[in-house]
Length: 639
Image (tube, rainbow, N blue to C red; front, top):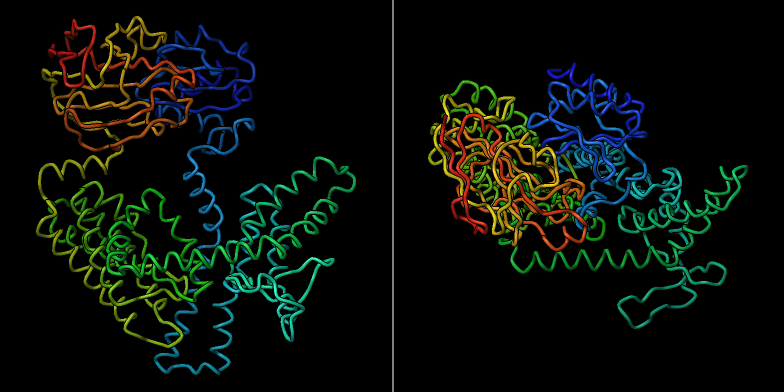
């Protein structure tokens, strides 16, 4: 609560927390959406210590703070009692981001709530298989049967659980989704497929299906939906749409039971007649397709997935493989795709152990111990984000270890037979119905080799005690991302853009044009590439990738803000090629942006390039009207 009083004063002068519809922040300012801007005391805010200025643009009430705006924002949330998050304007809710991002978000939202229980039941089933393989249990004993029921229950009735999470994601009533899932696995339906079929549908094709029952004369293709994934997700999507439509037309007095009744009467038959069969066929083809790609070269597939698995996890891309693995388990009884990532977490802890043994930094050594222990059980986030990723080389080496282990898994034909635990708890998931096979031993060998490779390479080549690595680790484990310097020195900045040079005063943004946020120049870009004007550490990179700050080794603090009010684009048309905390070289590509799309969105592209600690320098600006990347832009002479 460093800025507690400032946060209180800001909230009081925007009309109180009850006047706030939403509040977010960009790299320099708080952006309020107020219910009534007339209640805000603009002049008081402008003259307040800690506030640079106040602006109104794009329906937002903007309180310009400066580089420490994230800290002020946190205190505004706390003082406003917003429970750790900004209030949400309902009109702004809805799909955001690219199609792929929304797909990943959908998959993660559907599967995340059940993954813990899915892993737990998988571990029980894996241990049960291990006990039988070791001769500790007979598969006819009551103990085995009860443990097997415990391990199989969620997976067999997976459509019920996914019905809940899927329809909730799509905005429908969870219990309606569960009812649809329960109908799909209703046990009596499986007894209807005995005896002679009424006739054959699609005879002579790959979709040939016997018809045993009809629904009002319409043929129903009965299939087994036990453990299925795709049919219930598609059905839940349609159910949510149907439910929303019915709520608009059915009177409130009968809505409570008529809406779910009609939703089920429409969606369940539709699922059995159309959605279920098509989705099941699609799932089978998807399973055969992924298996076909894997079979082209299991070793290459293993190297690729094992080596990049941790990168996938960092960016959330692993969610694209999770449904494929579950689909393969349900359609084929085993999955070789996800099975190739098993060595990655062990390679990660191999690198951490090498760091823990070799480092001469007590703080890093102390952090390595709990990271190593949690990594044994498959929880590698402390190792990745706290240890190996900041040091860079150990993270790369851990990926190499994961790739080697993945290649071994591919060579051995190792497969997952259930979704189970992580780390050492994942070992039993490689035991199939036939017991312990070469694939199981391949999994054991892969984690040992992956661990050893990462340990040895990190110990020898990880650069653990080098000055730069030490500096990176120190910065990662401190609350501040600022680079400590004792005295600023002269610095030369080159142009980060191709374009026309403008004076800051020509910008239609008071915070920049007044010089309140720093001195420098503006550039009207002609190409959508922003390069580093100087070597240094990325001290700030806003999540929407429209603004970036660099602190040089000699102490200069540079801020580049692509366009005006471009934060409202929420990251569209911006692609970052660096991360906060990364050390970048002069001329390195930092951000790409789509000039045409940004213009179509009505946002000015004028880009300020300013020195925020300008009081430490005398600035000599270029006299050129047009610049290219790499040409001289600003000379900084230390005062």
